[in-house]
Length: 444
Image (tube, rainbow, N blue to C red; front, side, top):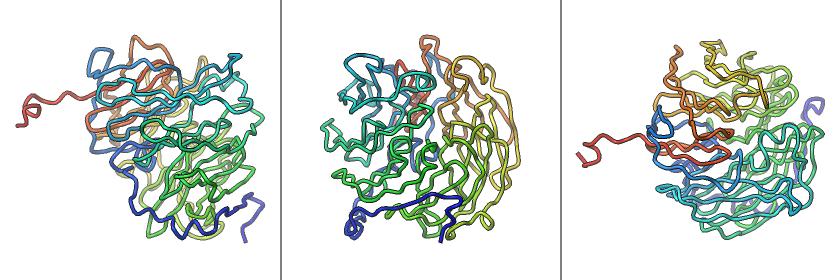
């Protein structure tokens, strides 16, 4: 039996017969597209892409599209289409509205914009909620449909042409701090899995074709778990990983049952998603004390004593780190480019990023998570541009790219594809592209 002193957990199976047919005979093309938050399996890494390391309003800019409304969600790429969410009318008498916007990847032109009216009362647009708004959940796609989550506005599915397929509420609760929610949906086989942390303190799995609830897992600690779940496939075992205050959970993604857990001691609230690699899960975050922990994957029940590899005080508050060649990279909430040894947790470097500091309006200089491409880490700050530094054991700042014509917040994590990087602000969506050499353009 699991020790309830440390975990509050319950699982309800809604449709017992569903799992007999849950194997997807045509797996989604998530490896081919940047089709969810932080790309393939949410790890933020695309080593074979070659986006530019330097850009501006006039350099390496392929196109810029002014968006109809602001948002913190990241763009996703599906074939030649881009999807992003936004919000309007938070303080209007007509009521809050969310938007799912589809753009053409080649030109940046808006193909369609679907409006979803709020259901019931929304969170109060005040205090910290003003720093990220009402469209902080990044969409996900299986290559055939796009799935979105809007907190109290519910979960929805659309086809790629914008036709609404289903809409379901996952709760209308709120935590006492009025922070809103931000966890993004993911796709696993025939399931859409959503951490409805604030709205109902539950993780849900829905039939992706109908929106029907398949299972749900609940726990009081989920109220302050803001990270997006991650699927780990190691040694023939598949785990659904989620970091909560003081604990790391590993669930069976097909049933919602808890397989194992570890006590992390990361207090308060948890925003970063779990990072996985080489049989290890890495958890970050906490408030008011930050921390990081490495936990060997696998086992049953409480694995705290047997599976913890290392702990560290070097951590990140909101952004999720990226793992590359045995090193963990991130830009911290205090404005430092940081690198840890993935095997030991030892600090390799911690260097101040010029102009990025935990002061001023909103406090935290980074909301976006780092991404990795072609040996470089891209860390987008909210108001001081994107810092590009080498993914090497010695710190080397390659560029700090600021856009003079856009003074709005850049809260969204970039998306990557081929030679392109897609960057979203509260005003616009940008496509930056590495220019091909003349020989390649001629096919030589």
